[in-house]
Each structure stands twice: as C-alpha cells, then as structure tokens.
Length: 132
Length: 132
Image 1: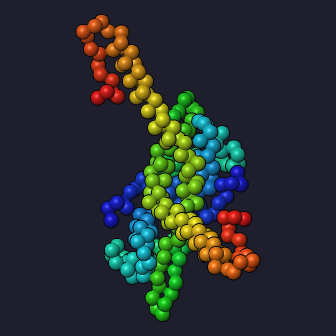
Image 2 (image 1 turned 180 degrees about the vertical axis):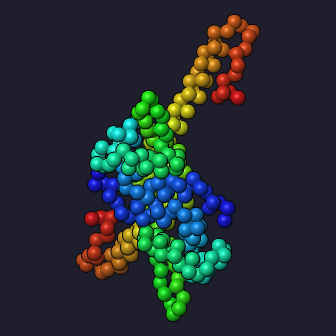
C-alpha cells in the first residue's frame, strides 16, 4: 500500500477542505495578492488570513515573497495537478455511468423503432427519441 | 463568494486527506467489500476501520448496506467527480505552463534555424532540435 503514502496529497486535500482556503486560491488564480488584500473580502483579521495562507503554503499551493513589510502571495498549481491526477484514476466510474445511460437511451430508441416497424399500416408508434 | 460555500467539497476533500481512507477507496474501486475485509490489510481494528468508513460515508463517497450482521461497502464516485470538476478550473495553470515550455523550445529551434541560414557557406550552425 506504499503508493498511498503520499504526504503531498494529505496536505493538499486537507488545505482544500476549507471553503475560505479554496476562495483564497481562487483569488490568487487571478494574480498575486498581499495577505491584507486576501483578508479583506472575508472580513478576516490579518492573523486569521495568515493562518490559512500558512496551511496553503505548507501544502505547496501558495508561494510567498516579502518586500519590506509586505507579504505577497502567488498560486502554485503543480500540487493541484497531483490531486487531479489522483482523482483521474476514478474517472472511469463516472464516465462508465454516462456511457451506460447513453446505451440505455439508444436501446430505447431501437426498441421504439422496432415497435414502429411491426405496427399495421396506418398506425404510428411513439416516435423515437432520435427523430424528435 | 457564494460559489465556494460547497459543503460537499469540504467533506470530500477532508475525507481524501487521509492515506488510509484513500486506500480504502482504492480497494472499493475494485468491488464491494465488508468492513472486516477493508480493515485486514491495514492491521486495523474493526472500530478503526468503521471510523474511517463513517467519514467516507459522511462525504458521500461510500454507500453501506447491511445483510444480517455484515456491513457491505460500495464506492460512490459522483462526489469525486465534483472534486475533479473543482480542480479542473485550475487546469489552465499547468497546461499553460506546458504550452509555454513548448513555445520556448519552438522559438529556440527557429532562432537556431535563422542562425544557420546567416552563416557563411561551409560553416554549420548548431543543429536545430527538430533535426536531431
């Protein structure tokens, strides 16, 4: 089970489990921001924002650089790519379900078309979905 | 910031932040298992496994059905699809980086080709990447 011992993913998924941290990442996706700018829309204290930024930094999702007394934050997307890669291994479960649904709809159409062919002349069967 | 108030995602990302829970999901991706079967490879107590299963159930990632005294668990992948959808909005950051890299390599090739054309006859420039 060694492949599941991926401390990056532990920290990344933990960081993403908080709506404020997800919102901070969204703002950083538009460009660099200071911690003060990030705190404002949430009516958060600088200390509160800083705590969230530290979790995001710890997970490798945010990079900080300091100019004088101002701390600038940037999005680091590579670890998000790792998380997406992990989720991708489960993709077949929802794509398979969509494929199944498509096949059910096609089968209904075929059954409807067969019923239409078997009716005596003059009687029309329920129209198939594809001809609607 | 209403779009970030997605309690599903809070619970899903929290559930995924633990390596044992990710490993349990992986086993369930191969098929239904009892809690006892899920506990065995981790040398976990039934109580320990049950606690993890409850977190996964709470996040909507596992469905449980009971036959007599046996609890069977199944993977529920729809919420993983929601998490992937969230991550997809950041995809442009890593795809853009790859596109940038490709453009840099192409520009190097073009510069190398131009240098080659400008050299006096008999002198060869460094070969371009595309002709290696």
